[in-house]
Length: 66
Image (cartoon, rainbow, N blue to C red):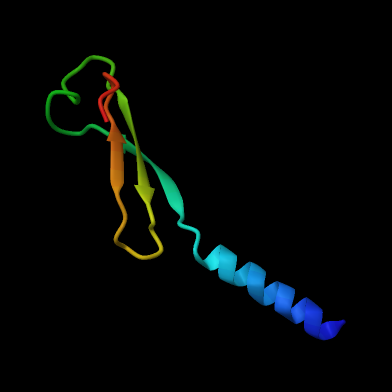
């Protein structure tokens, strides 16, 4: 019974180790055209695969462009 629990735990940890982690990021304009607007937009972004430092960084601009 104990060996079975260890094998199941090892399988779960292996499966979770292959998962990537994405982190939401909030950006605020301090320079450029967005900072000159009366109501400054909040720019949302997502950093993908952060545990390896090699992932994508997606930014969604206020006009919807990615």
